[in-house]
Structure formats: C-alpha cells, structure tokens
Length: 360
Image (tube, rainbow, N blue to C red; front, side):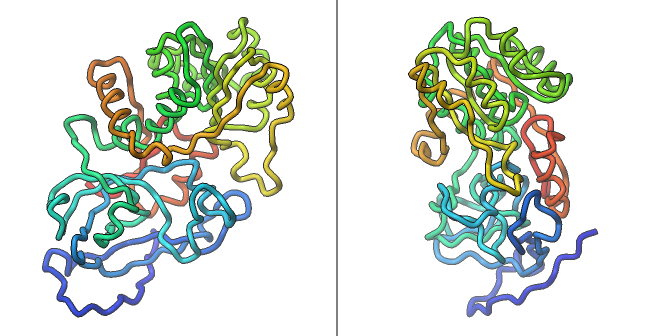
C-alpha cells in the first residue's frame, strides 16, 4: 500500500469551508525524470489539505483520469509542443470530475467537468487558471464518463482532426491505422469507415485484432506479433496505402512507407514504440518514399483544434448514440496504482482506452 507523504500547507487568511475541512488531497508528483521506462522511484506520493476556491475559482473532486502515451513525453526535459512537467509538480493528466466547491456561476457545485486535473484526488483551480486547464462542463446524457475520456475526449478529438483535417479522407481510399485497438486508433478506424474508406488496422494479439474487425468493423487487422507487418500490408492492401495514421513509429512506420501510394498522407500522432528508448529515437529509414510518391507526412497536436472541439463532439456523439461507433475503455482502479497502470500503455497490456478510476 502506498504511503502518501504529508506536505506543508500554505497559510491562508480565509477559513476553509466545512465541506473541505476534513478532506485530504492525495497527489502523485514527478520526483525525477526517467531514463527509459518510468519506475515507482520517479514518483513522490504526497498528501496536503484541499485548498478552498478563490474568487471565480472551483474545487473539483477527481472521478477518473485519462492515461495517455503522451504523458511519457511530458516527463522529459526539453522543447516540445507543451512545457514538461516540472520536478516536484503534480503529474499532468486530463480527467473528469465533480465540482464540490465553487465561486463561479459557470461551474456550480455538482457540475461534471473535464479538464487538466492532474494525478490527484482533488484539484483546486483559481479563477484565472480555468481556461488554461481547459475546464468545461460535460453532459453525462451524451456519453458515459469514460467515453468523455475516450471518443468524446482528447483521444477522440485527436483521431477526428488528425484524420479529417490532416488526412482528408476520400471515399474508396485505403486507410491503415496502427495501435488500432487503442484509444485514438479505434476512433480513427471507425470514422474512416463511416467516410467510405477501406480500413486496415495494426494491433498486437489475436484478441485485439478480432475486436478491431468483428466489433469495430475494420476490413482487416494485421497482428504484428505473428509475423512481418510488410507481409500483412501486402496481403490486405494490394492497391497500396492512401492514408496512414501512425501511433507507434519505428519499424511499423518504415514498413508502411514501403506501401504508400502517390499523394499519400501520413499522419504522425505518436511513436509509442520509441517513448522509453534510452537512446536516440529511431526515425523513418524509408522517408525517401515520400519523395518518390509525392506524399506528405504531417504531425497532429490536438490542442491546435481546441476551438473546434464542440464540432467534433457533436458529430462523434451522434455516431455513439445511433450505434455506428463503439467505445471501449480499460479501467484500472485506485490512485495509488498510477505508476504501474501507466506502464500498461507501453507493454500493450491495455485493451482500449486506458482510464484510472479515482473515486465514485
């Protein structure tokens, strides 16, 4: 059982509301930057009193957290699309929570919200940080809490805008998706089918491949654990690949590059095979295929599309409601299990969107 270390609270001149006075906030903070795969030694488990809301601020009880491959990159020092988590800071994470104290009419007590809550039991947000945290109210009638972290959350937004804006699919094209059974992959593949494309997934293990084809409706799925991906691509993409949505990088990216068509679009969403590489990240060896085929490779960072999230949510929610899209989540319980739960992403243990349940 994890022991959360007590930290010193910052004195305040205002009295703590009774609803908060008996609460303790368990937090997981980054203790050191990992070399390779993160271990429990990279984290500090701390406990501190729950801060009261300031002017226009709120206090949110965390219900569940999204565990994403991007979190590994946030632990590294260096320039990226978002600043790294600082040593000693609460680990960054998106989540769903319930407002338990508020001085903001837009977020009344009892409201369900999503935003950057961090790996902690409670999140106190000052009024001037609500926008930065991306705090928004959610409607549980539109989707379950875990769906709001999956198809209706950051993975769904990534898949939607990556495919639709960067990939620009056309009916009849062949779309290949790596990490097909994961959070982003399942949305991408189903959406591509809805847009009239032929969709081939890449996943690890027979169970995941069966799920991708039989449950999600992909046309085929290549099990990278059972043989060379290039052989699977040759068999299932005889006319080549028009769009590749890459979540894994490494050798699989190289294999797909050998099969792309003229004017193909390669969407770089992630490179989970490389995140824990203690040496330099392996880049594409077959990149000259982009030149030969006049193809395009472009990255997708979901935060660039924040002002258009409502558009994507409305469309995807409609597909969920009428049954044309499915959403699978893999839920792990207990804040203290975070270090081990996060590693499931990199071993391929998770089956669907990985969610950490913190409280009911």
